[in-house]
Amino acid sequence: MKYLISQFLRLVPRKYLQLFSLLAAKSLSVFYLGNRVECPVCNHHYRNFLPYGRVTIRKNALCPHCLSLERHRLMYMYLKEKTGFFEAPVRLLHIAPELCFLKKFESQPTIEYITADLESPWAKVKMDVHNIPFEDDSFDVIICNHLLEHVENDIRAMAEMYRVMKPGGWGIMQVPLNPERETTYEDKTITGPLEREKHFGQKDHVREYGRDYPERLRMGGFSVEVDDYIKTLDPVLVQRHALKFGGHINFGDMIFKVQK
View 1 (tube, rainbow, N blue to C red):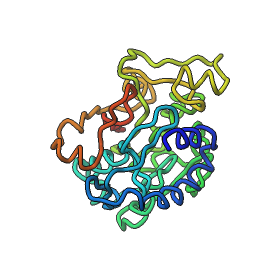
View 2 (cartoon, helix red, strand yellow):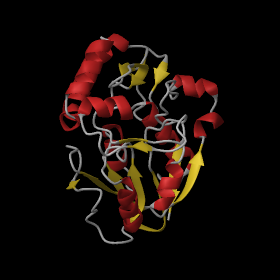
View 3 (cartoon, rainbow, N blue to C red):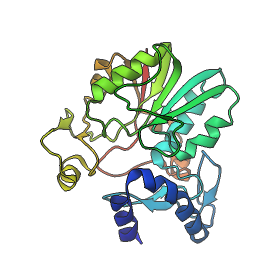
């Protein structure tokens, strides 16, 4: 099962993967009935979450109902507990929107919700993040998760997001990050899918972020708050919601909140 999941995730293009994943996950959910884990995004509970991973398969990772992963569940809890995201009226730009958040954000009467991406089937606006087609100071909040490792010029993309964020606005911008790397590793001569997977962790990644990621966000114009939010949570909740990724690459333990 783990091998089949890994091969499926590696071979199917990202834009098609999202279309088929939900149906596949829900069909498997019958084998995971139980109450050991609970998704804080959709509130469904299971014996375990589904395994997930393109290269290394992680156990207990993917919610069969809404497709949330560890990082999504943690971020959702952070938004609820440590921001006024679900209370004050906001104009939200959600870049590369995750399926698990769509209905939650769309149903919130205080959120003017705009989704955007170059490939995502869920995006209402088709756009290149290097050239965001909105005016300056357009959004109160920008959410952009696990996209910057894919783009040609991440600093330019950050600067574009800074440009369209309102003064006083904020955002969450998560990336896969290797905490053992002091500086971000990128090499534009590495273009083959297998070489990119070897060097950057995935065949469609063009860099592997290091501990300098907050400084790169600052180069885009933002002030940055790094919140080790997971360490403030009760370990029982961490286990109940399967929040902790235990591998070499940090997929979301740290929350990177940016402000303008």
